[in-house]
Image (cartoon, rainbow, N blue to C red; front, side, top):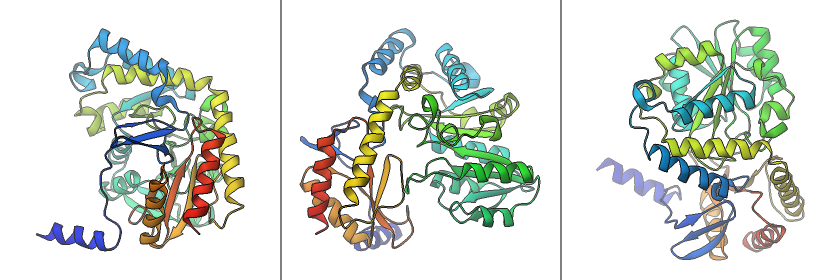
Length: 379
């Protein structure tokens, strides 16, 4: 059958994906088939996935509300714990209103398909996440992509009052930040709406972990649509869209994946709420994470490594060729280090990389051990 041929071709090119058999995982350690590894592949940037406060909140909510929301939010699935979480998120991030989704992929698809018509244009950074790119392809709007963080090219493409500009806060495969000063100025000048996907900035950047906009000194109301996820620095899962009350009311009626999906389980909402409260005062873990980032980049600079320019927890090591990337990842795994090998189509052909992600849960010794293993693996 055709799909068998497709898998064979991917296997031969070193591009076939397989589900790892994971027994347990947190910000620092991963256990697979009984063997422990240092985990440099996850997104648990503050090490909160095993935090006692989150576990306690989850257990309490499960006892009080049960384990399921029972229905979609517009039927009977929107519980008191969901309302409390939405209110706290809005207050933390300086937004009028917030709504919850089961995943960032779902949130991005729902927003773009609900908001844009064939009369609109969607401008996307070329390195935006797959959920945003696919939503653009499925939307009736015309989609135009601009070169990564290229404000001059975007300015040349923009038409006044005709659509939505979308960029990530921290780019998930490159680790660099969007140019939000440039984006907000272009959006304001052209009177187009602006959207941020801050999945990888929320919790780790800015005052009280408010994210990329706070880090770069951009007012929240300069951006009309805010999307963030709970499965990275907050250590749980799920996502939100925030903005004006009018926007959220509109999406309550037009975002199909929200209208027709069972809501987040109440224990999950309780865990997210606990994470939001922890993150707002998590200055020490954020400082710890920054120390690990500085340690890794300084150590890598002493080795023949090609690191991409990133100051965030995502530290991509460019390899180039797909088979070589897999070989290095496998060598690291044999030495007890779990590192993600990212290959096409997730990244452009010829830019396969090790996506090394750091956590506040990592120690100095963990980073020294990884750097030593990399020195051997690339020799």
